[in-house]
Image (cartoon, rainbow, N blue to C red; front, side):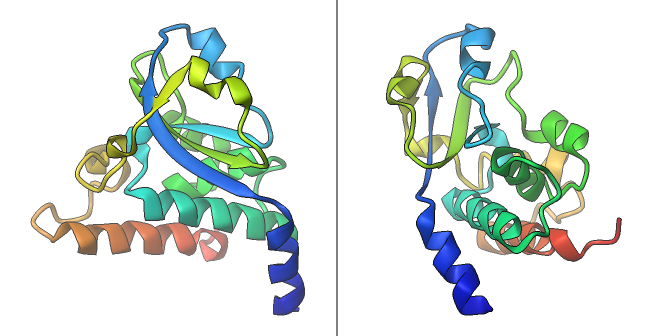
Length: 164
C-alpha cells in the first residue's frame, strides 16, 4: 500500500516558492488562487521545509483519502496552520490587504504570468519571520529556532490524527 501511495505522489509535480508582491491589486492576486495553486501569507510559513512538508502532506492526504478539504491548495493552508477548519486557516495564513510577501505551492506547473504579481525572493520565509504570536504563541521564545521549527512541523504532521 505504501508503494502505491508513493507512486501516486510522483505523478503530480509540486512546486514551492516565495517572493515579494509587486502589486497591491488584491483582486489580481486572488485571481491566481485555484485548486492547484495556493498563495499563502509568508508570515505563516516557518521556513522552506515547513512549506514543502505541507505540500507533501496535502498531496498524500488527497491520494490516501483522508483529506479535510476538497482542494489540495486549501489543504496546504490547513497543514501550515495545523487547523481543521478552513475559515480559521484562511484567517491565519490567507492573503490579506496588508500582505507584502507570499509563499506558494503549485500542484502542477506554475502559471506563466505569476511574475506579474510577485518577484521571487527566498528570504521572505524563514523561522525568524514566522508569526509565532499569531500561530504558535505557546512555544517558548527562548528556544533555538531549529527547535521551534521542529515543534511547528510536528504539529503540521500530526494534523490528521488530531481529534475533531
